[in-house]
Image 1 (cartoon, one colour):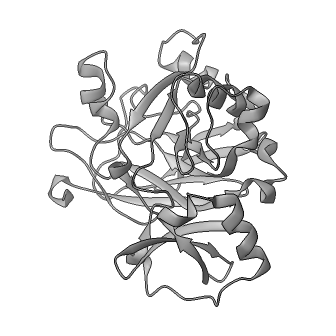
Image 2: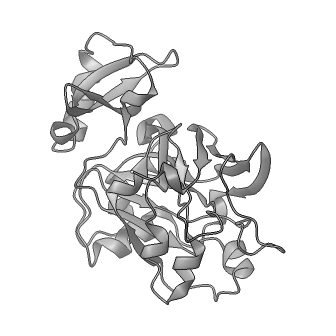
Length: 282
């Protein structure tokens, strides 16, 4: 099943989306993430009548507003090498705010303090069960599904200090989508392996990697995080980006107003977002 978030009557909803773009309502986002497995099973047995959204403006991120968004840095050897960083012994985990998440098609503004934004195409995992101190195998059983993510970064602020938080949380800098593919549609929670991750800027391929190149597997990442921080249904774990980011190039290359960046993962689809100037911030 493919899931998406949408807005109706001031509520955020989760629905199943088909190839024609019709959405079958399942539950409000808050209700859905209280019991995702149960509600998915009910939706499969007795689906509601599908609806057609008027336009993309009705889309919302397919996670609750309470979601933790945790990202893993340097999880591809090629990216660690291009950034002149040591290959880490443990997952390098940093946080994002849920408020930075945006949907397919939404514009991303470049802060006035930055020469541009940098792209980081990634596979993201959506959590479906509460995970506390779990093994790698147990962690995988708690995966709801997978989606595309773009960990867009403000590099000037990221590298002003040793703390990455500010540079990883510009306004509207976390595209996610276009849909969440449930683990069963990918053949189970191990379906994340051997998936191409491609990023394009204005149609040009700037990143071309494969999830088989990850240093830390999805199970390892989730298990590691769960030993310190409880993972709950709806939390988002972005699993790192392959080589090819913009700041390491000579000269550096950044996303500037008028650019369009896309992240494509086979089996999920393409996440596409235009870039605008600082005047486009809220």
